[in-house]
Image 1: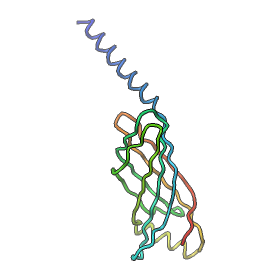
Image 2: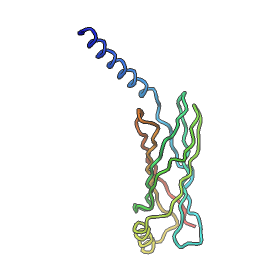
Image 3: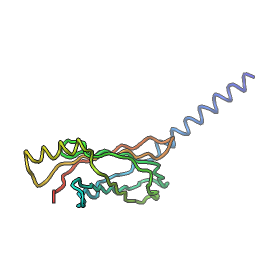
Image 4: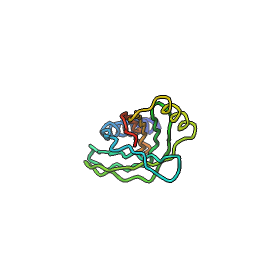
Length: 151
């Protein structure tokens, strides 16, 4: 009975060490902002489009389960969202994700008020992204900043 307990404990320890080793083997993918555009439309409220380019430096494909994102313009929360319609990023490959959304009313109002007080040709943006690649693997958090020209 005692030998059985020792075997169970040793088996559990080996399993945990094996899983920890697997997680450390996964390298963090590179996420870059490929484009950030204001899409003209018939509505007074613009639609924003953000293109992300993801490069996978691993020998296994990354099946993206979900993504959550938040975008700020000039420090104002403009829009956020989630998506589960995502590509599989091939081993040593790359893929693109396009996020579109209508802005948050309050954040947009504050942004427009700021732009009316201080007009400018470019506005700064910040994109915060969380990629979910599975239960056993940690979520990948990426934050990028830049500027976009107003049309």
